[in-house]
Length: 101
Image 1 (tube, rainbow, N blue to C red):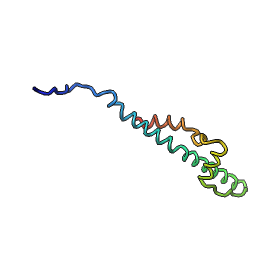
Image 2 (spheres, rainbow, N blue to C red):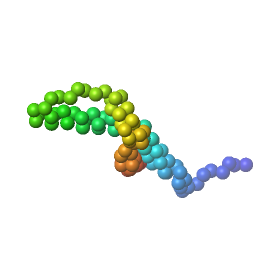
Image 3 (spheres, rainbow, N blue to C red):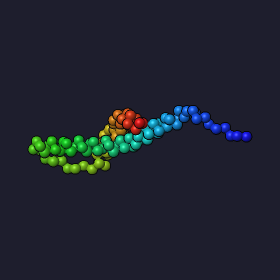
Image 4 (tube, rainbow, N blue to C red):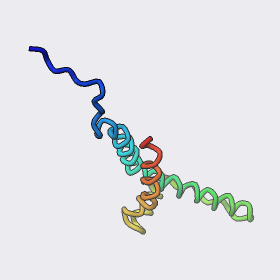
C-alpha cells in the first residue's frame, strides 16, 4: 500500500496564516498593558520637570526631585490604581496596529 501524499495545491489553514499576526498583536498588547504604569509615572516625571524648568525661567525656585515610587504612590492614593492605566486604550490600539504586521 502506498501512503497518500498531500497534493501540491493544498492551501494552508487559516490559522497557520493568521497565527503570526494574532500572536504578534497579542504579545505587543500584553507588553503594553504591563508597561503602562511605568510609562504613566515617566510622563508625570517629565511633566514635573517641565514645571520646574518653567518655574526657574520665571524666577521661581526649583522644586525638589521626587522619586518614581513617590509619584506612583501619590497617583494611587489620589485617583486609585486605575489611574496608572489612563491612556491604555490608545496604547493597545497602537500595538494592535504596529505589531500585527
